[in-house]
Image (cartoon, rainbow, N blue to C red):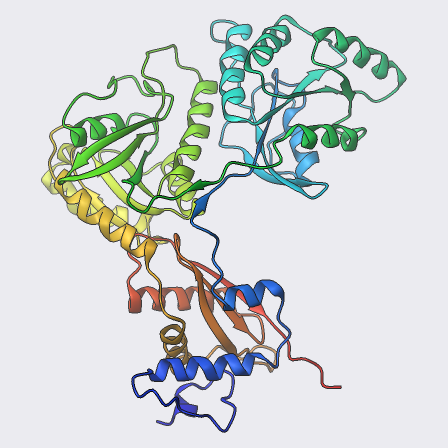
Length: 500
């Protein structure tokens, strides 16, 4: 088979092609140079050129500033969030406390990017509304860089609002006051009365109709820090592992087992822990940083609102980690909550090991059926590594470190551009993209833009079907491994320059 036949589907190699004088230069590099030359005929953006040059982000970590939307139940927080982000993502219902899941969205205003946190999920029935509002405002204040405090102007400032105001003043965080549900002159007068809260100018808005939100956002963006701290990544630092999972799956028990001592509170009551606790432990003769993402060490009365904020903190811990151990209870079927945690890790682009805890509670006769059930439940994640163990007894916990190493190795892995394009050339020759509407898109060139997680950019002459993208990902994994790491594949369709 000739080179032209073998690489049918890639851009034709311009002639004549000069073979480098260095006899050790690989054929892959020669083909890469030829394909790059072919790309010169296409319109490329500065971002394309940066990807082709391998210009990765520096080895630093930085987050977008966070603006937390805080307020009593049913003052219109989620409606305001939807207005700001420009689409209906947050759940809106005329019932207090309908927000339950992790709700943090990327947003932009006047050229400023930030994260918008919708602090819903408040439970007002346990130990009084004032206590619930105060507890959850504390968490939001702690996690945010600036606060957007929403008050219902038609009701005015309540005792709960004033309790939160005291916390806001004590925190020293910048606060922007939104007087919501202002739809006319009477509302303007009601909003003016909120000057008495001592938080500065109340911005009259109608989250439902969009009235006044521009001025409010101008003030909110001005309150955010202009530069976030850049933290250099120390390659010698212990790798960071997040222990995540729904309540009562054994996260704290596993941390204690790995640490060899009782580091955190373990209680039969689900949700004993609330705040993430970083623990430096030595496993297998090596230092690691573990994050027990359930939260607080003290035992407090648990509310659904507190569980909501524990979920927020879990998301923050995943973002800080390099690999996540997702703990699942092997003694019960996989739940929707388990699936959401797994999705959260995948969306964050972190390496992942699925840990089925309490395996010792599963009878010998049940294990075969359980294995089949797990395979069906996780059919979309064939790449995820899986360990069955018992955190209580320590059975099979020695298998964790090899699995973590494998997942991190995949997460760090880089494929050379020449090797990647040779692989794709063979793949396209063997399985070309189907013809759609009389056209067959060509794969022009591909490069791995970054690692952690591995991200590939494929330049094409036309749209690739989602099924063909999944086919490419599956074959990439078969050829190069990537066990335990998500892959991100983006396709950029580019057209040839018009000849003048």
